[in-house]
Image 1: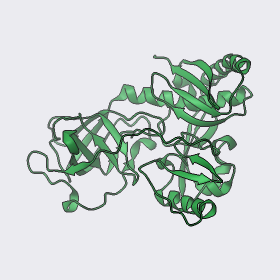
Image 2: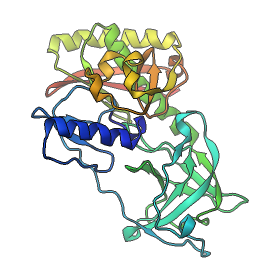
Image 3: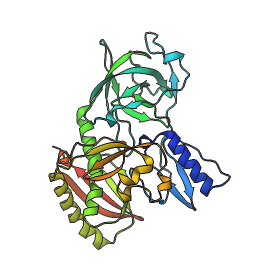
Length: 342
């Protein structure tokens, strides 16, 4: 599965070890942040996808290396990390996966660190309602405030590492927070962007449903839910005449699905049973690749697939969605769309 929120790390390691043994005898596998590549039968496999797909051409993404964090005490001499620092941090509990509309919460600070090169400060909490950037969806922004009062500290980026630890980054080059490890802080997510990002992400999933209703059998391979420029890509290329005929069918299907107010669903299921829950074109056809452990699956418009992001309660909440274009790009078909304000 593509998004590390979908399954525990041990499942990913076990699955990749099995693949390496089968297809790359004598070779080792490695984990690089959140992106994993495995060669299968001479064809590279990309796991950096919103949707799980069959093997397709792999292109290493352009990604800046993770910022090095130097442990430092903020003003006032507060400790850097509970237990004296240096120990491995536990995976952060992701509150937003249980409730898209949870905009405030309280949490305990586990670590406050200064980013290398004067790049500002990063905070690790035991749990968070801030969505970490990933799975094609932007990070939440907002504030952290020490319980009992004090100045609010701005959160401008949120990222989850390969161990499931979420770091909340402040303003680049900005001030240190006025709290330290062991303190309780109040979390406040900026509500309008969170709601809009959930709509854009869910609209991307609904495009998959509309494609099926329009008679397409193309397999979804990538979702980009940043705006402007949101799109979903599908494996396979359509002729110009087919693309021209598809666009109005997609728009009609989207309008109909939105008007029906189809409820969204969220479940955590055993990976070995994904075939009982997910639509066939959203998971690998070989059950041996489903792995082990628990996987979060989300249903939008009646189509279920693995996903770690935030989503609307029902399709009517999407409002107006405009299918902008159907384009061929190399060996894929790209559907671009816009979620209109209001």
